[in-house]
Amino acid sequence: MIPRIHQQGSNTLGLLHYLYGKGTHEEHVDPHLVASFDGMAPDPGRDHSVTKKDLQHLLNQPLSLLDADQRPDNHVWHCSVRAAPDDPILSDEQWGDIARRMVAATGIDPGDGAGCRWAAVRHADDHIHIIATLVREDGRRPDHHRSGKRAQAECRLLEKELGLHQVAPGDGTAAKRATSAERHKAERQGRERPAREELRGNVRRAVAGATSEEEFFDRLAAAGLLIRQRVAPSGDLLGYKVALPDDRNDDQEPVFYAGSTLSPDLSLPRIRERWSGEPPTQSTDTPSHQAKGTTPSGPAAARRRAATTAWQAVLVIDHGEDAVVAAQIAAAGEVLDALAKTSAAHTRTELHEAAFTFERATRSHVKAERGHDRALRQAARDLVHSGPALGRGEDGAATAMMIDMAFFLVTAAAHWHARKGHAQQAVAARQAAEHLRTAYRAAADVPLGVLYQRGRRLSQPLRQRQTAHLRQAVPELAEQVLAEPGWHALAATLADAESAGHDPAALLAEAAGRRELQSADSVSDVLAWRLRRMADLPADPTTMPERTTNAATGSGRATRPSPSRDHHPRKAR
Image (cartoon, rainbow, N blue to C red; front, side):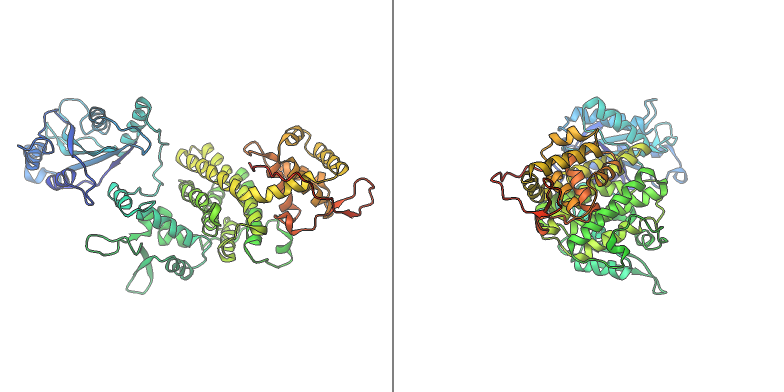
């Protein structure tokens, strides 16, 4: 249940016309009173013998107790209370009780017999509006300081008592919610989301990995958005607004939104902060291709590099200073935006949902120390510039590897937010993790199926040797891993690593020891992807020769096992 204290005004009748009208897009249905200060206020919605002016006159009578120069300029208090989309439809009586509790909690009518005059109007199933005059019956002003915080606290109690969806306490860092008019407009136009939310996603994807204003605005234009820039007389750029080409007002003019109204971190000054940080210290866990000064191109290479960078960020989030962690989490949002922007069709929906949901987790009152996020922002840039993934072959398998690592990155962010008491951010991160889990299943099914088949075709001596490596490296996990369907894929990966010249047991111990695995659906899946990344093996096993060490003779000669008739890839995760 979401309360909102609107800006105070001076036009009681004007607000009543809105509350009892059809709405800006005819979304108001059957407007009527559900409660008032004395329970007897006239209702112009149900009683046609009274008018809105009659209700205005009743509400404004306390103003006559004051001299003209004593009356507040903005005497109209306005609060809306909205239920969650999945809440049951409440009755008028229930909404009336909610209104009485809200005015009591906020100090508008605290129950001392001399509160403000107020009325609650319901014009939709899911919310009410409360209008009040900010002069008490005794002529004094009400004590409604911090009424927004008080309203939030009361809504948390109401959710528990009425069995409604329990909203995590906010901290004032959330993006502005779409209004009811914007939501109804989106429904009429057949949009999945209101224009405000659609624009916020477009702007976030445009800024992901961008390194200059020119690049940022070029991306906005390439996304098909209309752009207005605010320029000072000196020629300096002060801000910007964006609009969807087909989102128009009644005069058929585009509806523009400033970046700061889309989200606090999308104002131009906040975006510029992303480009102003100092480079972080060079990591020692750098892939060999970077150490040699080369940068592979293409979606698969970009995803492998992003997975390595995400892994480094997980370690920072687990052990870093708060300001550094906040920067990593903010940049993780850019990586998800870039991944969604370049995703293949079968993962696109879930990756977009993950990025959209995780957006709430990227902001808190912990100020991010920019510069330490340079590696993740570069990973986002690489993803964007590498182009869209086809969803098959090496780039499809590398996508699964990247999503798997993104899951751990987002989960680490959820744990950090939970430790810091950031309730809404922790919830958003956990929800994003679930979308990533679903996207992973879609991305990993085919490449893990191929690995599964390779593992089933290993010779018995070689399979026994990989089992011995497993028991030696992670004895505490061995039985669990051996019982998982994914063991065959892991065994094939161990064999590939051995064939490439690595020590399988040492590599496996390092992969398992880097971070907890309890949040994984399949430990063997996670270890297989980690090993393929650490050993620089192709993510798609079909791109490498199917060679395994001849364990029976110990000669080290490569053999190609004959195909098995067992052609049933398991379901990933």
